[in-house]
Amino acid sequence: MNKRLFWKLCLTIATGVVAFFYLMNIVTARTEEGMSMLAQEHRQQLNDWGKRAEELYYAGDQQALNLWLENLTQQENTWVSIVEYEFTRVAGGKIAEVYTDRFYLGRSVEWKIHLYFNYNPVMDIPFAKGQVSFLIKLPTRMRPGSFWPTTRILLEIIIPMLLLSILSWILYHHIVNPLKQLEKATREFAKGNFDVRVGQSIGKRNDEIAQLADTFDRMALRIGDLIKSQRQLIADLSHELRTPLTRLDIAVVSLQEQHNQAENLQRVERESKQIRKLVDDTLTLAWLENEQPQLQQETLDLVDLIDVIVDDAKFEFSHKNLNVTLPNSALLHHSNHRAIGQSLENILRNALRYTPVDKTVELKLSEYPEQYLITVADQGPGVPENMLELIFQPFFRVDKARMADSDSFGLGLALARRQLQAVGGRISASNQATGGLLMQITLPK
Image 1 (cartoon, rainbow, N blue to C red):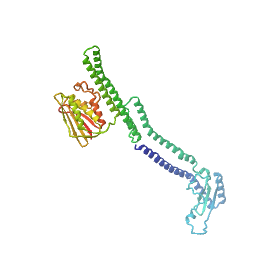
Image 2 (tube, rainbow, N blue to C red):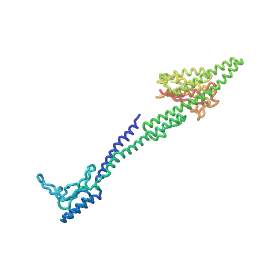
Image 3 (cartoon, rainbow, N blue to C red):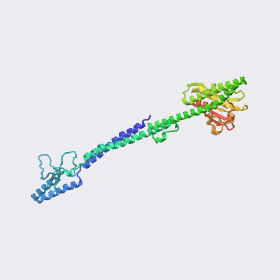
């Protein structure tokens, strides 16, 4: 598993949260700085008071200046004063003019007011001439940051909780929505809807959940096909059993009536063998389809195996012509002689069964770098093009022209394909231009 979901969540949560708090820290700092500055109208008010104090100071009317200062103190409930100051160098280098010209005894109106102090600072508005300043303890009504505690809670607690809740909601739905689709599909599958799939409903994801959905779809496809196959197999088997069972019933009735006992006993024996073969082949086919077994791996010589099969076929179909072209040797590794032998026997019997007496079946084994090719060509009636794949389905028969032998139940080619697939082989059918059916079998070396 590639852990794509882990890295996606890691990138989203770790990187996102760190970036979020970094930005929130910047926003909080800038908000605090902005709220630490005096309002523009308050700065203007303090500067106006400084100009008025400067006018009264330089007018020389001490009484008017004191009265104005007293009124301002009572009006703003604060402390005000006008002070003169002078620097005296005691030792060291010369004092720079910047200190003598713009020295502040209090805080400039352009400076920040610390929001965490529990007292109001003294503001210093220096006069334009001389080393004189108007000092005033900042009135409470002008103190900035009155909403800072609430703003701080909003920025540091409420907004992060809200945004992280939204992020959690998005991640939750990103994970849970496809799981809900999977749960819904599972319920539908349990109700018998074997065509339900999840992959299309979860979008273009490429993570562990997408892999889970893909696994579910493959499981649903496999189980659905198995169940449908088993249902069809049971239905076909029950249908195929009716005919031999009916003939058995007739033979038994005839025996009971003492008519043609020898002939009826032969009929009973033949029908019993047919039923046994039908059941055995059906069970073998169901085992191959359901279990997909790992057959015993062995090394075999295809030439030897085909020789045995051909000898048996010539004995059984002595009235048919069979031409065989084989190399001296054809070693096949990691395969299974039983599966290949039974499949080749079914294919060859099928070709001989439907080839007329005066016609010939051609069997040829060719060797290629990576595989062997076995071709079996008959001269029978052939198969319609649209049914070339259907002949590999259990109990499928084309028509009466392909039913020359009553022992055929339509399982031979189906078994052959499943057995060849179990050892990594393939089989395909095509019609020859000269007539007849051509079977091509490929087996990896």
